[in-house]
Length: 121
Image (tube, rainbow, N blue to C red):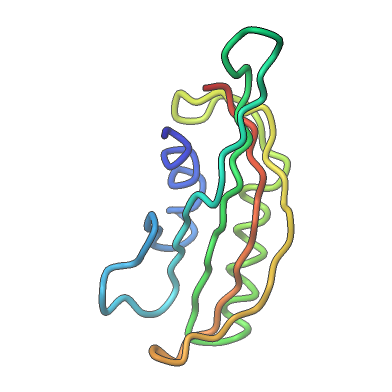
C-alpha cells in the first residue's frame, strides 16, 4: 500500500512519524498512523477505480497545549489535499473526526484523528 508514503511525506516534517507503532521508548512530539480500512470503489465490471482508505493518525506530546498545536498542524497538512503525492494519485483527503487521549504509561497527551483518503490504486 502506497498510502503510507503519502502520509509519511505530509507529516514527517511536523514531528517524527511512524507507521503502526512508535519504537519502544519514544516520547515527546511524535505521530503514529495506521490503516483502519480500505473500501474499493468498483465501476461495473472493472477493477476499483479509486480506493477509500480510512486512516487513523495518533498524535502525542508531553503537554496538552503541545498536542493541540501538533493536532492543528496535522489537520492543516492533510485536510482537503489532492494531487500526486510521492507518485500516488490522491483524489481527496478529508478530516473525519478526532478525540483526545492520554497515555498513562508515558505520561503523554494525545489526539486521534481519522481521515478518509481517496486514491487511485
